[in-house]
Length: 335
Ligand code: AHG
Ligand code: MN
Ligand code: MN
Image (cartoon, rainbow, N blue to C red):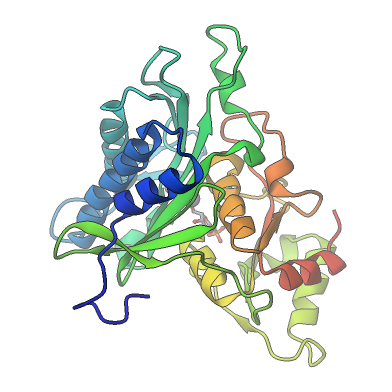
């Protein structure tokens, strides 16, 4: 952490990416750092809109229902279009997938457009109306080789361990971006004075244990038996004093879990037998980050990153966090 801002060197996200690339991928063309730069720019624009919520017209719902069957917030649409505009300038982004779009957007047809970027443009969007932390989540894949022309889904439906990068931004008391390219997790804080993301934590590690669990307890009656048993145990004397925190924005609940340890659980429910969260642009990117920080992510049956997606907006149960805490959940719940 930057202890003495007056004298400490200032490292922006762009400088950091270029530096790591030179170190680990000297053959890289720099294209990839441009792509992360475009994502950073989009999130700065979104952060600005979030900060002015209440002053400009970004609060509330559009009145539409998206492909997920959920109410679309005005900010969802603004953020989605902001991201599409920022990515559209880059020749190397071929396909954009978003929670807010029924179908993938083909930005560039050429093979040179090798990257596929998947987004949850605004995570926790219904929280924006009440000034609670929200976020943006992203995942980056590379086009597959040998796929026949026009078979767009074959490029997109790759298991999470194929991600070449993933990250999120949390719009909160400060705006923080975390990303990984498989070389640890690094965090940047948006400095509003200069409009740049500055390195604030390098090589973030998730505590291996943490006495916080995060779940929507109101669904207790519609959770599987095993999850109910875990919820009884976690409150018992034997468990030894856990606390419950649930913000209701995955990014925010995950960010806390990453820094403080603990476990976040979104199990299947009677109404949503596959859970609520989306594999491609929620569970996969956060799973990648959790693992890179020494934590773990599972759907109860298998590692999130090993799941082969079969649909764009596929949902998955998610148990993510400190290893020991995820194991506690699995010792009661084995679907
Ligand atoms: P989104 O706003 O992108 O649709 O995501 C909302 C998600 C996620 O952020 C959060 O963890 C979850 O919804 C909360 O769901 P419940 O209200 O069912 O607990
Ligand atoms: Mn979401
Ligand atoms: Mn969303």
